[in-house]
Length: 381
Ligand SMILES: Cc1cc2nc3c(=O)[nH]c(=O)nc-3n(C[C@H](O)[C@H](O)[C@H](O)COP(=O)(O)OP(=O)(O)OC[C@H]3O[C@@H](n4cnc5c(N)ncnc54)[C@H](O)[C@@H]3O)c2cc1C
Image: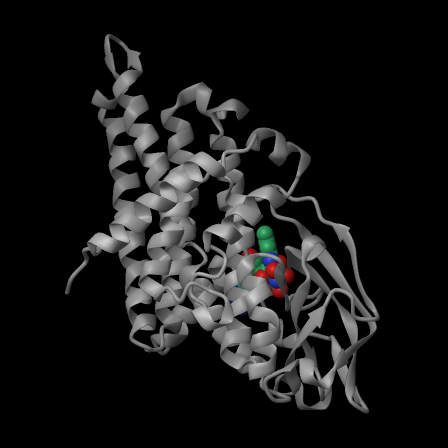
């Protein structure tokens, strides 16, 4: 077993950290307050090649293997504080590009992937509905075939990137009487008749990612935009979730590393009772816990990366990584605030935003409770 990065991967990591630190430093406190998506930074990431990392070069990506993709996303999380921008990129890659790459026809791949990889197009994923959250197979959106097109009707109420997206991977049921075996995937362009994104939804964290509600009212989707076969939506959704859960929090490893470093620095510098606060065991043990969490989370992530690099199934491992990284990220944000004392509570220290951003990770791509359920099922419970 070899945990070391190659010289090339180390250099790639350094290049991304430098790019992120120099090019992606916007006035984030202000953007967060105004809930604004940073399109300029998105475009810079597109030019740099970060938006199409795991997509083959002949479809416009950089053809980066999955472990190196993880390394790159970790570097992005370390160098860039805009978790909202990073979340937008992750949603776009794992739930937008990967389903098209894996299940799309050659024509769909040629048509959509180059634009998605360059960042010209923003991708989004519409599965969740008002009555179908964790119980996603209970979705009510329908798709009826009519000549050479499908007519979709329904509402998707949690669409990350929704208000700025150019295309949506949407799940609808072509045969509700068959239950989940009727669920089918579609590629829906924002300009198709009957598509409306009705509002930007305000939220606690990740405020620089746009979240919207997608309305499909007699929406006309050409048959050639069906993703996979009729009834294969379940397999597409589960495949997307395996990839998304496995890697959507790779960047959070970099973020946790940055938080850890700032806590070490602060605990060394800040003096109370005539000594640095890092000398108090109740402070240093928090920092040790942050380090332990970081390294454990990293090991779980790399295991999923190794499995997928070797074309193996990683459903349980992806659920374990998602669960552990999200819970660790939240706890490490809480610890970082505590270590910084009253200053940690101030907006200008940017730790409260980190906490608000981190909390979302316990909910999207399946809540922590759902990850517990998946892991329990794999253990035969
Ligand atoms: C920031 C953010 C971005 C999102 N982006 C997208 C997106 O791009 N596309 C998309 O389709 N969806 C998206 N979602 C939706 C997300 O996938 C759902 O919020 C999530 O699956 C939970 O569904 P729900 O909110 O309806 O909660 P519910 O399913 O109603 O759950 C409520 C509570 O009950 C618990 N619960 C439910 N079932 C069980 C069970 N079987 N066992 C134990 N506990 C259970 C849950 O864990 C939770 O604590 C996003 C959500 C957030 C917060």
